[in-house]
Structures are given as structure tokens and as C-alpha cells.
Image 1 (cartoon, helix red, strand yellow):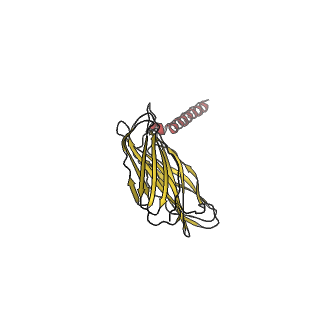
Image 2 (spheres, helix red, strand yellow):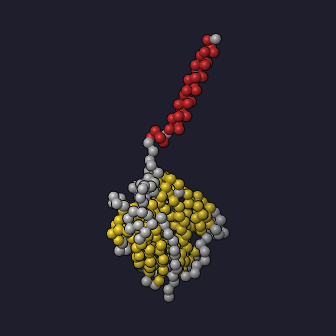
Image 3 (cartoon, one colour):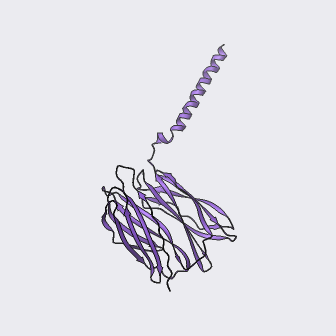
Length: 265
């Protein structure tokens, strides 16, 4: 007996703003069968600079497999890959998986395009835990990602939550399992460190929520964007504080002089 789903999506991972850029798109088509997870992956470069040392990979649970890749991917060119790995016996339901494309620019600086999706086995009901908000924002050397998890049912749920980021960023503290009372909504935040991502990049980040509902496994995936900005100097970070402080000192000194003058008259 086979159960399958087709998942179609695209992701854009851009490098820093420059005269030329590499923009990688991914279109995965996934199928679950008795032998495991099979993904037909189309990788495109819609930028105006060739991507070098292109390497694809598929991840599911504790399993991963790498594709053949390509030495380079020219602008407007595509690469077709078929990636397969065993999953073991799975419950009916929804299961997250992710695909990555690693590549470098002409200077051999590494980048990674990332996408996280859900593949379905059988015909499960809709998931009753959602991620309605993922607030990315900007990050220089460190920051945080804030998101909301909501229980859409009148029963208590405990869900496993994972934040997935591309290489170059790091989640420095994993998310503990979240317990939601009926209809409850919680706002969560995780710290993110920028290890190697360049300023000007806009990187996709994903929140995956999983829980079991009897014999059915449920998963929800939501996406946000983190924009990498230049790190500011000590003075630039505190310039407003310094200006306000200087203004207060000037006003205080002026008041002191006025008071002395009034005492003399």
C-alpha cells in the first residue's frame, strides 16, 4: 500500500547586495511510499552570476542523503535531482522534511538555500496547532526570532517545536516542548547568532510544530525572513543616547549659570 503527496514550493536565498548576485530557487516534489521518501528536486539560478560547487541534500528525521550536485550552475540554468531515503514505518499524518542547496560564489564564499516542507501520509484531518506569526526582522551579529503558536481545538496539546535556519545562522537555544491549553495562543522567542552570513542577505527561517493526535501525527511549518544588516560601531549604536545625554548636560549647565546670575542680582 502506498500513500503519497505532491508538495510544490520555491525559496529564494540571496547573497549580499552587489552588482551581481546568485539567487537559488528550489522546487521539490515529494512522495511517500513503502520504501521511504522520494523527492524530485529542481534547482534554478535566477541571478546573474554562476553558483559554484552546488550540492543538494534531503533531510527527514535522523536520516539524510546527498545528491550528485554540479560543479557550477549558470544564470538561468536548472539542475534536476532525485533524492531518496528510508523513513521507517510512519503513522498516518503530516511529516516535515527539508531540502538544502549549498553553493559558493566566485570567491568561494559559502551560502545555503533552505526550504522546510510537509509531506502527507494517508488522509489526515487538518492540523489543530498553527503558527500564525513568524516575526523575522533584522540581525547583525545576534538577535532573536519571535513567533506565535496557537491551539485551534478545545483540548490540551503538547507540541515539539523546532526553529530551522540555514548555515551561517545558529539557533543558540532549542525550544522546549510547548503545552497549550484549549484555544491557547503563546508567543515564543529563540536567540539567533550570525556566524558567517553576510550583510545584505535575506535568509529564510522556518518554524516546525509537531504533535501526535491518537494514531495521527500532525506537523505544521511556517516561514519568516531574517535580513542581515551591518554591525554598528559602539558609537553608532549609542549615538542617540550620547546626544540626549549631552543635551541634558548642556541644559543643566545653562540652568546652573542662570541660577547663579539670578542670585547675584
